[in-house]
Length: 570
Image 1 (cartoon, rainbow, N blue to C red):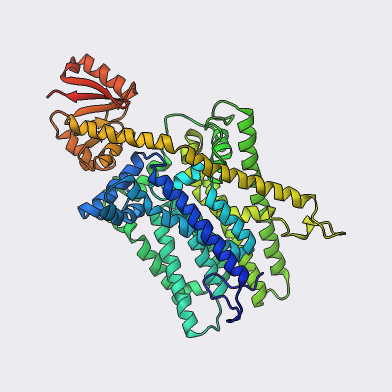
Image 2: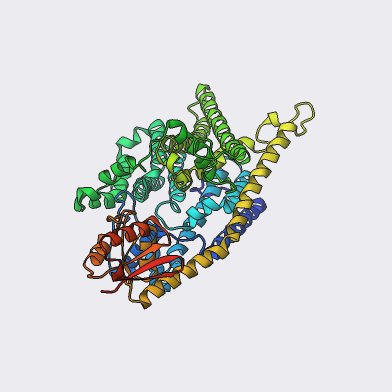
């Protein structure tokens, strides 16, 4: 299994001998990818998942790029994350017009390329049949993972593709490294170094969550070819990195310090909801909510069922805890197996031969996936987000998808001789146990895709309500308004900026306005209106303040689609 070439090299097979198994595999993978992409296309056609203000900001950025000629370097209000999704959506906005559908359709490209890349990389690191199984799992996935694939809120749809691409490039460089290669082959090797640097920095610009996999890739290069990093190859790697990271450099040169990457990262690290959480609560959120949500567990339990976070539900606690524990146990076994195999190959007298080196490269590549995922968990688990909002922030663990092949390989039937009865060579009880576990995981992933389609009616209803609300506000001339964060940006995008909204906190002080021109436009309006969700804290404070000032009569009150509207009479 170690002599097969990497996906970036041509398969050396007899020219006149058809590889029937390979053709069948290609047909199967193609069919799975087409069906998976088609299902997701149907979902976005039906306005699923439900959009939110974060996604609307990405849509407004795409609108500014496609129709306003702007070239934003970073996601509005977050100087540490690149708006690649807005640039991908901009051509679709020109072609199809601005909409949530136009914003999301480009994300299907990320998903389809991710499936293909994971299949090819799993096939290289393990076996073809196992790679087909992994491809099938990734075609299904849980509702939470599909939401992250189809909602353009920055980073999450493209991060898994960027991470696996970095891993593939690192492995390709190591596999093809040979001091005696021809000039033509050396030129292609130099190209790989440049592409790796470009892809790594581009991924960092997209979202810093990719950092553990970038560091693991660099670690492998240092282990195997550290001398090359001090030569022309290293210079090309650096050049590619500088080009990809240039948007971040330019942003930090031109933007005020308050909008710089450092200031934004400091604010993110120090963010708090005013409550104090123990380490046990943080680890509990990561263990019972974060890891299961990021690795495909279906959404069958409420988000507060962890014993350290809220109400205890024995069934949910057992299921989620078992899933997370099983993942961590298999992850540990996979790491131990890779390290054991690396040490075994290093201890052999023929450790310097090409074959032994290839074996080490494969084991290190497996370890790259595992340790990258492990570091992602280690960084997330002690954070405040893991305790305060584990369900929505489980998206920070999106790159754990890359570890699924390495983890599930420990359960793959027939991969090791101990699964069989040595006396009869027949499958043993462990074989059937592993088979049952894999079947259970497949069923869980299948439940996830079914669950998403049951949500379509609710998503369509939400979309219709949002459209009617925007149209109603336009009809009554409430086009300069104050509202809360999760309403403001949606109304601006839905109306294609015919409605301009400024965000208020619950106490009616200025809130998180990601795009300051909107706030300025409303502030300059002599008689802005107010639109709040019915019976919200915003509305209660609005009524309280204006009753005290005896100015409530200056507004005409009405309700529409679950919102209270205070239309200025001025």
